[in-house]
Amino acid sequence: MGTTYNIVAIDKTAEIDADSVQAALEQTLADVNSQMSNWDPNSEISQFNASETTQPVEISAELATVMQAAQFIHDESEGQFDVTLGPLIELWGFGARTPDSPVPAPEAVAAALDIVGMDKVLTLGDAPATMAKAYPDTSVYLAAIAKGHGVDRLAGALQAFGITDYMVEIGGDLVTAGQNPSGEAWRIGVERPDAGEQKIEEIVDLSGLGMATSGDYRNYFEADGVRYSHIIDAETGNPITHTTASVTVLADNAMLADGWATALLVLGSERGLPIAEKHGLGVLFIDRDPQEQDVAFTTVASSAFKKLQAK
Image (cartoon, rainbow, N blue to C red):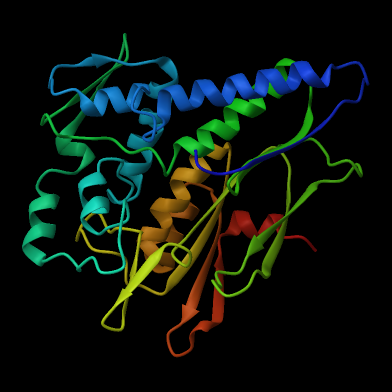
């Protein structure tokens, strides 16, 4: 997945073989990559993207789980979570941007919008699970949800060994269960969206939940004094321009937290907070001050998030 992972697992019995656990975790990661990785040309999703057929293709149960979650978040986020936006992401240069790459022309953005959109370019089927594309060049990119799914798969591997107290983290997405080594709830820090330095904005007590943060402050470029984020608005085809800089989501699992973090960042705090409340999500929006930009921030928290803030 192009990132690091970190696992803390507590063996209360002192009888679990650490090497066996490590082997199971590595195999789980390999399995996730073989199904979900857009960087592996032989993965299940890469083969689907490379295929030119528009007929339904049978997919694994694991990929079906991720796609069903992606469809749900898409439907509930005003269409802003969309795994078919690859052409727009590439057009804006967030696949392989070079410093002198131009800002795309409006006509190019409009043309890319014509060939994306989960509702019009993808069809999911059940029993057996299938997926079909509307156009031969339709593609699916799972970077905004598969990492969280990988976290959940690792948690499942730990549970298979009878481990009930753990924290699993991949590239900032995580899930916790039980208690930390001190016998307390896991305490997790939420980073302030400041590209210049690392500071903690909030701390939450977390157990039995997934957590993910999405932000626009690490991956962006500037042209003619304008800042362009890698987070693309599915409706306009352009990078987001509102003041929300990062969104942290607490959900039932890391996959949902991962997907919702991206969706709610696209929406921004004003549109996103009512959706977070509707679904009972623990969400922290961190907004830039319109006057001071990356110097001053304000926070907006959902009801569920406020209950988990460390005292």
